[in-house]
Length: 178
Image (cartoon, rainbow, N blue to C red; front, side, top):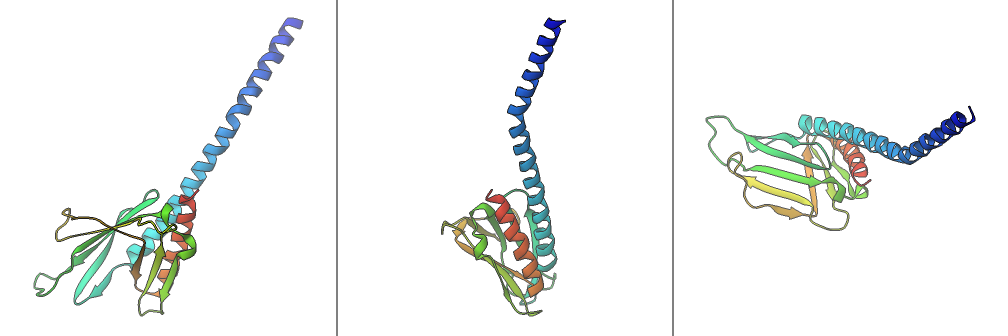
């Protein structure tokens, strides 16, 4: 009987020791999952706002905002021109922008513009490193050389949309920097 108690106590200590070692990993894993879920939610809000309010009309051409990849800490979108079949005149290029959110400075994200006259959300990289990639194409999937920038802005239809985008973008930046 005494031998069984010693074995039970030893097994209990081994199990508790194993749990103590894995417990921080479980806490970290659940923290990473919570961080990932919060990032996904912030990116969904950002994508919804930009898709709804990021298209614009200029010189008779609609430039449609197309979210290409809003998962993880690098997001990509395109501005695709839409013209009527009988359109005669200049048609802008397709623009593709990829932004490394972890490189942006949340303190330098701002909404600009007035009311319903159009607005923008602007942002700058944290260390002045060019982490915003920009390329153009005349046709889909034929993008040329990529330029890299330290600052960028996304045009939106109104100030309220720019504020919504700013809030979601700042949250995503913070989560990507963790």
